[in-house]
Amino acid sequence: MKYEETKLNENIKKALNELGFINQTKIQKETIDLILEKKNVVAMSSTGSGKTAAFMLPIINNIDVTKKLTQALVITPTRELAIQIVQETRKFCKYMQGINSVAIYGGQDLKSQAINLRRGVKIVVATPGRALDLISKKILKLQSVSTVVIDEADEMLSMGFYKEVEKILNNINKSAQKLLFSATIDNRVKDIVNKNIKDSIYIECKDNNSLLVDNIKQIAIDVKEKMKNECVFRILKKENAKNSIIFCNTKKKTEELYKFLLSRKVKLEMLNSDIRQEDREKVLKKLKQGRLDTIVVTDVLARGIDIENLELVINYDIPLENEYYVHRVGRTARKGNEGVAYTLYVGKQKERIKEIEEYTKTNMIYEDVPIDKKTKEDEIVYFPLSKRGLYVVTLSLGKNDGIKAKDIVGAIECLTGIKSENIGLIQVNDKNSTVEVQKEYLNEITSAFSNGKIKEKCVHIVK
Image (cartoon, rainbow, N blue to C red):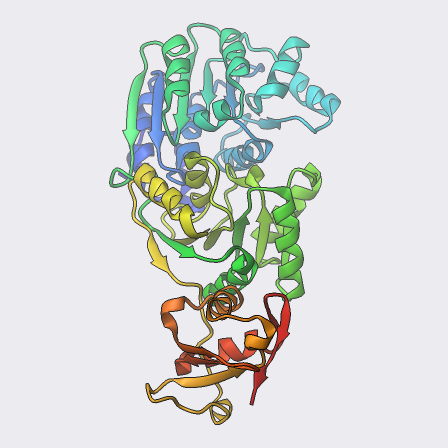
């Protein structure tokens, strides 16, 4: 269904047309008319499916511009998402006179927020803690709020905001319209709904029964822990994406990967809990403008960041919770675009990959670490052919150095990502060792052992 066919105000349709919004997504088609009719709605939909427009367009449509006080309150888990929603809202309101909006969140000057609210703001988008703070100070006044939205409800509650959400809902007029949007509906979300959102219409709108839109290519790579940094670099090189996000589970990992990629001349920035809000916004702006190749982040950005045409997401670490996988990967393939998501796992972590596949109702593609298979023809002459038709590479370490065949296999996997099944016969002699490899792996082997180590002992190729 096209936006032109909806009951939305013509000025909203005009703005949507300029933005290139022609056809409604599934969640928008299912909910916009219900919200226009002031129904209470609980909606579950995949990340990146257009939930913000689904609730914000009818809210804008229903605003009474003659009333000065706040008429719509959107509660969202993160400051980044609050900012994004307001940015989208202002685009939708381009031709709607008298409708203003503001993002309210912690870490921002309370005085300036209070000034904005006292001037009169029709739509307030706020994080729970800051919203309650301003409500208690009687700065954020809710008596005229006719619609309240709980956005990304599952994330909000998983972050521990259950009591804050309940308190906010208790301060809202009982006759107000209540909307809840979430990528997943767990028991905590159900509890909030049962207690606070009566007579609601439940909408479940998933793509092919998956929690993710179906235009994301999901790839899983089995990699040694020591090979992770190199693997990420190779993925970036292989995909040649204009913009990407790499997710790590800890601040320490973001710092380590950032330094490694910087040494490889990758244009990137790092975002974690130590980075100030104003600096976060500058980094995101640079990525959106194409001045960065990638950003390395913790889950501070797993939700609410809408980067136009984000091509690539890499999970350096498997997220601790399945829901976080959905929201990380959901940063790409938005608004009908194609996207690619890689997840690195180590050995037995494959069980977690299987859990995620079951949870999201999707299947990942299993691949090996990307290999540079280009070998210069003039390099081949150094390596004799074995009886099996493989090239024989001689390494400078052997039995006298305490080296065994399994040590060589482990070093090759860690330094190159080449799997053991792709390695031929290994013979460990007293002073050196020989390894049989296919032609396509010669470049990787020679590069790795030009400055590599086996059991902490320096090794080189004997020619």
